[in-house]
Image (cartoon, rainbow, N blue to C red; front, side, top):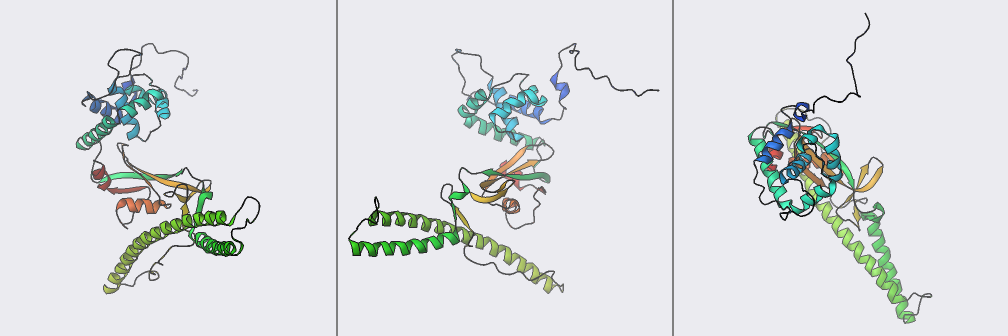
Length: 337
């Protein structure tokens, strides 16, 4: 008996228009978003009340589209427009309409306050109705490096900055001595001693400011490392007091002060040199947490911590053990809601 296969026919059109609700599971997040937005007061939405121009999309549709997109991690207006064609859930939400990215961006820009308050109300409703559970929930955390609007070649390390400051101070002293001796005789065509002194002093001040920032960061890092060291030392002493032999070597106190490779970027001081897929780049570390069952994006942050474990540990609120991918707890959901 020959094998039997399901008949797959891409050419015959559907005899009756499909109901997109049949294509989306009944417990899908999009149903909740549509119902929740339908209960909101949208009288504050900024729309064209004159009736002139082209027909506009209803505020409920645009608001639901943005809330669903943001809650599931899609933020680009162009990507949202593309999803109205490619994702069945989004096509259902839009009733098979396709707002263009300009309309999406304009609605978000004109109704920023309404979007913020509505997003808060929808998340709160999700928690109350247990669409989003708060407490004993599983959050999936992950991050990605985002390139800063600055080149890594605009950065200076602490060791290089200190060496350059010493060199500049020596050069300035030599130039001032020459100025005294030659009464500001030009060094060469187009250059004079006062101009060279001013240029080096300006560079010296920038380097001093950079080293001051690096040293302040080093003090903050030392406080964090000392807190972690104290915790390890305390656990080790508790083990010894209980008659247990501590495992591994005794923890060593962290070294105080900046390290020679600590960086400062003159173009974007808040960014850091981070390891990316293409090497080391001037970047930020963007982190997001998603509740795995509802797929609601419940927390997001951008940090300057190059190490993702440090970023998630800081988000967890201390030096508690934390897995980069998953952890259980309620503090993020409670903080958002």
